[in-house]
Length: 267
Image (cartoon, rainbow, N blue to C red; front, side, top):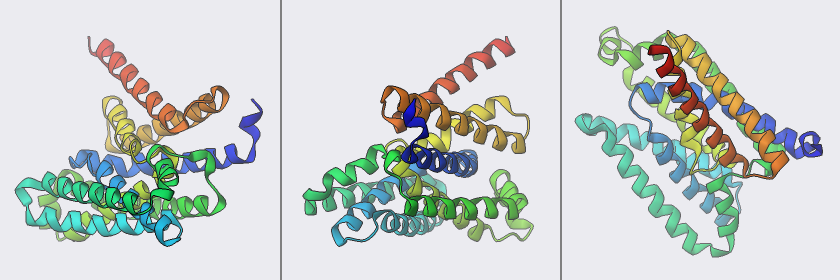
């Protein structure tokens, strides 16, 4: 139990809570717009940036963030080019991200161990700089969602109506994708690139079964994510489990319980 009161655990808990707020907040808009797989895509691109950061001796998370943001612009560009095949943009960028990451791995074999920690998460190694970055992204994401809530709501459910009403649809689409890039690139050190999409989608999946309004869906998705983060870190800390994997497994368990409860309720 002593681990729960250590400095590194407190930093891990704070970082996890911040990501537990922003990931489902952005994930709600991505899921409802059928862009759930964008999390995996931007995570792989971020890993390529992290690998480059280690190679050139620059703070890896910042380089990964830059890669993710640039890729978000590329995704939106391709989505507009292939309007009838929007998922194609995600597949193309993901392929490029995996290829770039693999290429950079071969160049910096001595850094592979460090980069691997970003694949599976290393939340216990969060430092002050990491927390400042995660905190800054959290402030930006929450501020944008609150300020543009009505516009994003309309865009999510009626994009054509949003365009007719005069809203800058292209700009708003880009804004959501960029925010997703910011959240994903800062979350990979917490849960890992291979698991980050779970924080974006599973809390949303739980809330969509339970909530009766869009606003309540957002609140419940954040609540589910925060519960999983807190419980997952405590369980992982006490029994020495992998924290990122524990958080995701708890999210899946919560989703299964939600499905069972929902089925029992409807029957």
